[in-house]
Image (tube, rainbow, N blue to C red; front, side, top):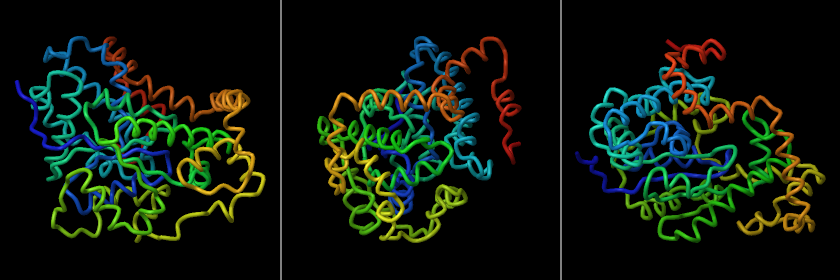
Length: 360
């Protein structure tokens, strides 16, 4: 038994939702020898439940777990990319590696190997050598957990002004219901990633969204040097993934050129009350990440009342459909495992409860 050859670290693009993770991903994939699928989310989720499939040194257990991962992707990926063509989503997802399942299982011996073999298979299908994914969970999943799940990683952490993030994030279904929650979650994302980076400086690079849109070539060259990846030499107007993402309202700007003025919306769109509220809860993180603050009350984020407010805000968020979806997603491996044991096709149930247009 041998593992797939891979001369590169696994690349993880991370950041708070609406921070430009997909923008960075598509810019890299267009010019450099690296391929990314549509966002998967399965890596840390299945890592937590890997015990369900027993000893993964046994080939039959790896086969069962891999099939469960594909079922997860079948159920969740098209729903996370709702509004886009299903066949196009499938073509840009890890589901295209299903035909190589036997080779993936053969070339792995544990969960880390299984994950890397899936991505290596995807990379070969896209004609790219480096492996990568992007992660922008609503509730932050620690980078340390994701590293444990996939093995050695190089993390690219993209940071955007949290006030602009909140304005964009709260407009979408999967976003927070309150500005307070947006501030708390943004702060959690950026500070945890930053702490991981301080402990793993050789494996971590941070950049500002505002720097990327102002000087994309310079920023991408720095990232390529850090990742040790080369340009493909092929000029592409856009990749298939980029075209797919641009069909959704959340990422329609990916279809056009980068706009260096796509920033500081908070200065005209936030009321003074909202601005004070955001900085009240996350002003310390704004300052830590190099952003200016306008209010003097950000020191609240260091007080004992912060934890109480955060807890109350999280409690409010529990009673939403969006929260229920997150609970289902994080426990989907367990549901898949149980449904397989009792002979129930979970994907069929999901299609009846939450039908998808264009699915065949």
